[in-house]
Length: 491
Image (spheres, rainbow, N blue to C red):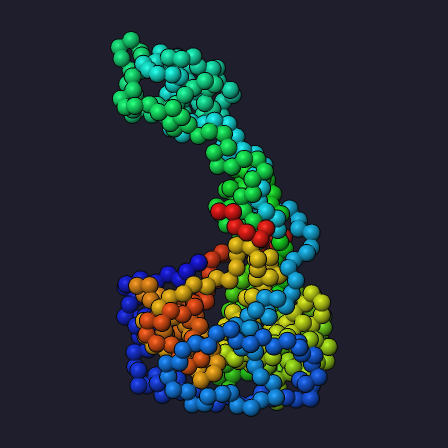
């Protein structure tokens, strides 16, 4: 899926979001050196993965960095590309026995097995057009009867005979072609004449033209779209074997958050509680609960300990502040920390942990755009694997596009910048600070800006936004909680 450019009528409004005020933006976007990550005793006690993948590319710098290397740190953050790879490989591909799901409930799920034709398509020779089935050269004597779709096997034709036939009707034995209605005429004796040359086999759909019984139509890992439902039905399926959607639970942290009304007296509205569940659902998860825990370490510990979700997502509390309880709680439950900080802006304090076999936790920063960065960096690759898409046709939703304007980079971290598409170019949006949602709300995707920045016209990877499939869950939760759910593409 690629983002859709904004309508021309919205041009002025969209341009207001773009990097227009260059001098002011330059001052706002100046980066400061990264502070060394906190290393509390509780955080150090969390088990860490031994292998630290290195960055795979060194992008071209288009601005003068303030530093040529990161400040010294006891725990270097994981490079952004490596963090995504590690998240994708953190969990095994689904191994549970898939349950058959009726076609009407399978939309948006992932095929657990290749889709194999149960019959030839078409299953008999059929007419591609309304007209006459003819045998041999014309002119032809026309039979009185008609052959209609859905009727049984018609009588065979003899040379020099024709019979009226409808689109989709079964071709009679020994017919050599179908003459379209507009290409034939009847004389006063009722004989059929062709207005143009008749070629043997014309407008006949032969049995097995699309596929033969046993042919692989789609690989395991394919997303079930409306077209896939149609293909499955045509191929003889009443149910599909699909992968169970992974279950996710969202834990919203922070005493300063309001769930309704206007901000007041130091309190702010929570943006992540409303945003994350539908976003996670679009990434392939069923959100079973959203819990507001405040800054309560015991409540966080109990929520993690009691959770049966495949993925726990926390918001805030991943840094080293006085009420940042995620690291100590992970240590307390004996979790294995797989990613502890990522070299990306916004969102560098994000983390990924294995709480227990079959259960992972993604810790998102509390700032909204930083949380989106963590969601697409760590949760999306993990859910891609858990939902069965990793090695099928449903891989990461990315594309490339040239920049319309240069983008200032961080000296040594990747930047994720909201962009909109205009005339096949990615236009960076102004409101891209960690606490801002105005840019991402107007965006078609997030541009992956390499350390040092990117020049005008430079081709960049764009992370697509997952607004492809609406809520298709059939369970009890508001986001489809409880709905049931080949290594190559054959198309």
